[in-house]
Length: 224
Image (cartoon, one colour):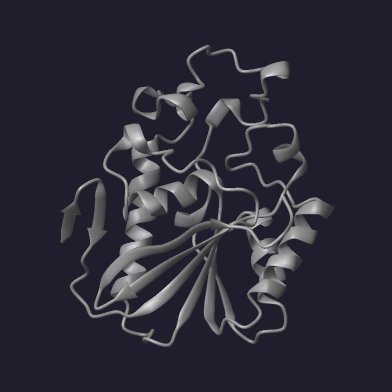
């Protein structure tokens, strides 16, 4: 069930699942620096991205993570492993946490001073998401929201985690917003409400009596 309070949706689960869910956006990559569309392209972290992940891992060292779920893309997996540190816990890949696909435009730069995308309306993805039309071979925002919501619902319905458990999700900018869209967004037009999280920013969800609420969003543990 979904309850509506003002502009916030709160998911009510049928099971009494209690846990804390930490969601991290992956560390920086070379493509992030130049605003090149990554999507499903399997780009690794750069040295700055690894540094940010290590700092964030140290800041979260006292959190007793039960396990980590990660996108299968390298930048998210490496971030997950750096945050994990020496914890003896499972790291589980799930394709529903991977980034949105940009199809034929992956690898193109979308920076103002080096704009390479042939479609002049492509930037609706960031500015007017309800009017975004995916390029050839790409995924829609609606499809992204459906799969990330499916993942989150499955996680909070599971019976293997308890009230003392914390779970870490390592994912991507748009995928993270997709996860949050099932907690607080009203429609696709407000998909980017709150903006794109910085690399290695951490968001915390609380699940109590099956109700998911947003505790903290986009916290960074390094000097920006």
